[in-house]
Length: 99
Length: 497
Image (cartoon, rainbow over all chains, first blue to last red; front, side):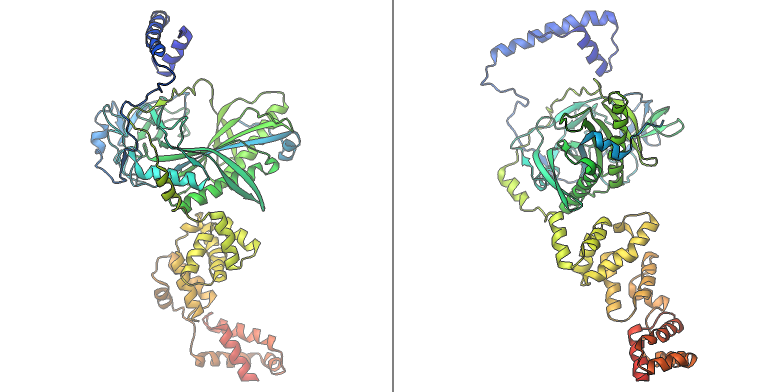
């Protein structure tokens, strides 16, 4: 029986940079629980002999040769950027969560 | 901010260090890990990007087969098992240097695992166990604008160039290295150094630490002596020289001991290494921020290297650099002390290449260590980047062997080579460096010197051959160093016997 707590939902929202207020958390946490429970019912069907599937098609080793392909121009690359400077993407100040 | 430190020897009296090293190797493939964008260094910003490495919607990555090959070869050289089947995984985090909002990496199914490398420190061998080596991709490059220091803290905004995003990386992770005691800093340095040599020998990366194509993260913890319980670790990021690896370990050992000695706990955190001051400072706390929610990458199919392919790649492995070192030392007849200096200077491949051009090993050693190393140090570059090639060293020594020049004149030929004045022969001609090969001018100079120092001439006549040195010196001076000292000696002795 899966159960996702309100705190876990708040944590996931934080990781995903989604700003949820208390009312939204109260509203969404139970809904997520219902979804998880529905999906969990699949567990009842899959036996130990059914391995989890990450890829629906049984392909392996699809490789590309190490040969250059055409790139975008810098203008094309930056065309969708909200802001740019010196041919670079301009992003807001990065605080706290340095990788 | 200055930290309290405990002297290194005192640390060891109370604690056992445990090390862990994570080394990122940037591969030298022509294209990126999952797209065909070129990887060439130094291109104009955002000119080596495409929808895949920019993470644009709908873009489909495809694995670079050459990068998989390099990963397997690295794993085999590190005595690893090669996975029969493994997947890529998404490591989810939000940071602007990774435009997809995840890094394509490997999680619990690394392509290489369970290996080891034997590391030599002062003639003693430490076995460093390798936990895993996995494939992933590099990030873009951020420039922080505003703020006083150009660092991230206090910056107003950042500018990102994604040319580097998606370049193949292999991350090599050791198991905890325990039992090194006082040698922990040296073991860390030797491991990264030997790993770099191995990567170079494999030819899979430029392996330039100062340019970031090899980057080391140093994990360190202390446990109370004899307890055998691992302590809380810190991870010092981006330590980019062998010397810094050693210093960072030493510094963190002293800092940890001070914190623990004061009855406080070590905070599990990322530390930043400061090359200039040789200290680490607190970075990000490793709490729930490190919740990467890995899951198998749905856009890439699993990698299942056939055993035939793995064996084919095993057959391409070069001689182990450490074994090769032992072999070459014996072949070249270098003493342990000579070999230590050669190795420390990174001169062995250069000497090997020079010897391959026909130069005697001791002559090759002499030029690289006595002459060119000094110039490299003066210029603040690695010996390999000093600006003279092994072929040029061999050409200079060949001219010495042919008695066209002597060692002293050869130094001036190196001056000319470094100044880009052409081939050794051209430099000798242009600078007028050729030795006086005709006996006539030498005899004239000898006569003059003997006349100026009749007492010396008498001594030589009386059988004191050592006295000839003074006359040779005078002749060398008169010919501006362009005489063959050996020939001058012969002529003096012929004349006075």
